Amino acid sequence: MTSREADIGQAELEVLQTLWEHGPATVRDVMNVLHERGRQLAYTTVLTFLTRLEQKGCVTSDKSGLAYVYRPKVTRDKVSRSRLEAVLDAFYDGSPGPLVLQLIREGKFTNAEIAELQEVIDGLDAKPQRRTRS
Amino acid sequence: MTSREADIGQAELEVLQTLWEHGPATVRDVMNVLHERGRQLAYTTVLTFLTRLEQKGCVTSDKSGLAYVYRPKVTRDKVSRSRLEAVLDAFYDGSPGPLVLQLIREGKFTNAEIAELQEVIDGLDAKPQRRTRS
DNA sequence: AGACTGCTACGACTGTTGTAGTAGGCTCGA
DNA sequence: TCGAGCCTACTACAACAGTCGTAGCAGTCT
Image (cartoon, rainbow over all chains, first blue to last red; front, side, top):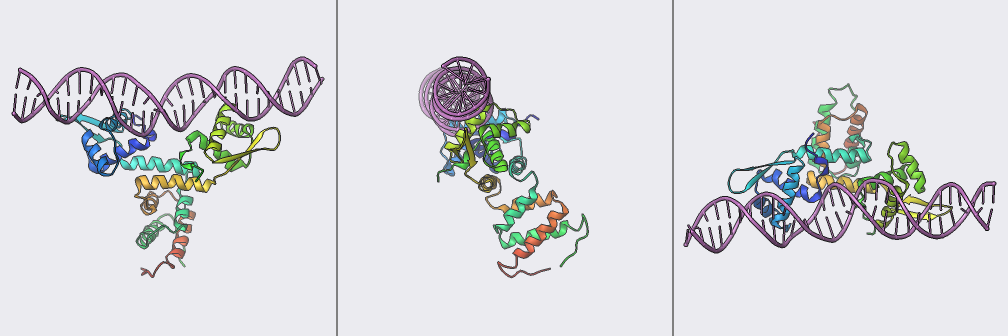
């Protein structure tokens, strides 16, 4: 358990996100991407974040050329999962059922998504047990 | 916009949770509940959290008897919603569709939940627009 | 009245996060 | 070879989060 992906700060996360999106990158690369997004950060600030992320085991670095190249060590999935689970545990008793129901009831879905949901669910309930269909 | 429910810390949240669960309570009440849960905190620590929560506009206090009685000012729903949205924005492009699909695919649902999901969705897709049904 | 008990106000300390500057080393072109 | 740039290491610092101690006030018990 070397990577403490739980305590990645907000700003650190932004940096990690650019690595997920743009693959391996140097400090300058990351900074440029952030700047394009309107996020103005000093070079050394980005460096600090990458260094801290490395200490936390979330990225690795290797010096191929002039500068260190950083690449993500934890997957986006892993982190999103753990974030989501934190919310789940704190507010939904750890089980996703109520959460999903709430989201669906609030109708924040496109028709395409609803269709897909239906498919997935229909595929799902075939396995566990028989259900009557109206 | 007086209540900044976004920056409630982890420990502060625990305190707020006990208010949601047990209604209005004094510092000592909250502390006792936490102790029962195995969360050992000094009286003054709990007091600090409640004071900070009050500064953030998340609880109110009134002195009816000997001690101040604190009661939640933001609803659990409000906070869970904003926490969830943070995760949604950071990892799921702000839209809950992919999140729900991921959760469902991971099969973390009981059969009862699946049934309920099906009901809710079937009721849902009637409204927005006509859909072809396989 | 004096002692005791419980409550709050205030301050303090540590670790973390967000943000950045400075100093010194390496590299490449002139 | 020498200077201009780019890179990293180290340091700094404010804000906030987590944690608690002390001191003083108010009510209570004897």
